[in-house]
Length: 473
Image 1 (cartoon, one colour):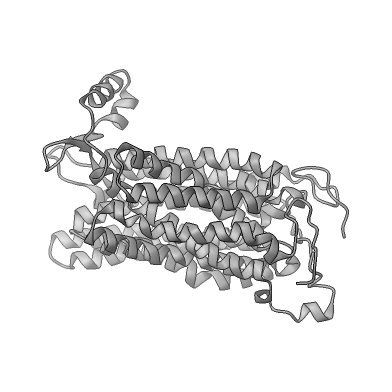
Image 2 (image 1 turned 135 degrees about the vertical axis):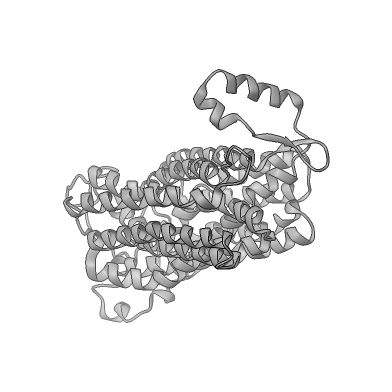
């Protein structure tokens, strides 16, 4: 076994890779921002094209289809090109997807003149979403496992959660930007969302090209993961498939179901906030108006949060619910930072199991429609989901050595779960209501909790902290 390193960002051979970690963490911010905009896009197309909740979930399907199609090629290319080459490839693909929204907007303009159908415009936007996702697949396939080797292995789960905190910051800003460009109106009150939707994506395309140049000229060491199962130096073990390791196999399933649950809750948060909370107290509107009057900047953000709905009661507007997404993502970010601290002190798999149980309870309370308690529980699901993706990732690739890049590609492919559940959750909501739809992610969290509590038995390891393999695999 190799000697232990001496710090969070110091590798076993003494390299201080704090700057490399910071640079890689910027990638997490990037895909968090892109994902945040996706999460407020569903309601936009429901309004613009008259889609049902299940139909608007094609946005999520297109996004996660990109992950599914590119995950294996991304893992293969990451092995051939190394971390640095794979990251640059991913950034270039994201840029291509961002610029695609310009011709997609041209197609949308043709709808007004009757040259193409609204469905063609929708398809053009979905193509851009899918293209960006193919680039993000490269970044996630490479950056997630890379953070686990940038320092002492005992703190692998801590590092990946810290990096994912940058993802949380991006996810907070994404819905804010999305609400401005997706739900904007002109002087007559007509929606301008389809005409301005391309603006933030072109901005992303320009930024990622600049970031690709920075990575090209930066030192990105190609550090190998610890080979705890001696897969790389033992002929008998080397012939074993990574699928023979149950802690990895179950991680793929857990990640599929976790991302499915996350995508469903994130996608329909706006629908929930518009339709399910009790009537908004008039005092909230008065407070918003007072705050908006104190600052021009606040006025743009706070104006229009509430409106009188068709039932004649004060409720969240689409814009207000879109902005409230950012409040949920603040809960998500707080969970990431506090989770990173917890994971330095306690076993990662046990924390995952406890958080999984907490979300089973939270989604069940949403299902029961208990007024503001249920609304609070929706925000709690954000908090308890915060550590799940990175922790499942770290637990799944534990001890796989050089095969970690290949294993990583399958765990990223499991993100395809996000394409499946929103359609099912939306279907349940169309038949019953949005609160009842939360029964679907509840079952996903049950499996995540099981994986967390069973991980030690599956991996034959005490935990990421001790890195002690206790039996043959």
